[in-house]
Image (cartoon, rainbow, N blue to C red):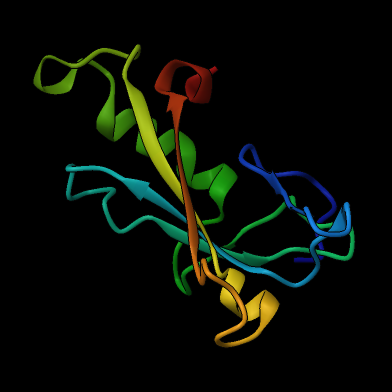
Length: 124
């Protein structure tokens, strides 16, 4: 992406064997939700030369992350089905470490990290 702004969800990867940024790791960012309206929310990226992803590429034909988050928050929160804006959204980051190290050269070919984002924080 050519825009220099930072998305609300970012990541930074260091190679623990060298202490340097891990460059060019393919990463998938996925919203884990039972709500069918948002369950297909997925973004991809590759770590930059400094090991960071500050902007995510959306699936073709879907909005960028900053434009999609408020919509997700409204669909999942807003008191629907007894839910409130204090609900947390679970996201997954999947790091393709096998692509970074090379096929068959790592014990962990993929690393997944799951985390929560407060719906209220997204809406504000």
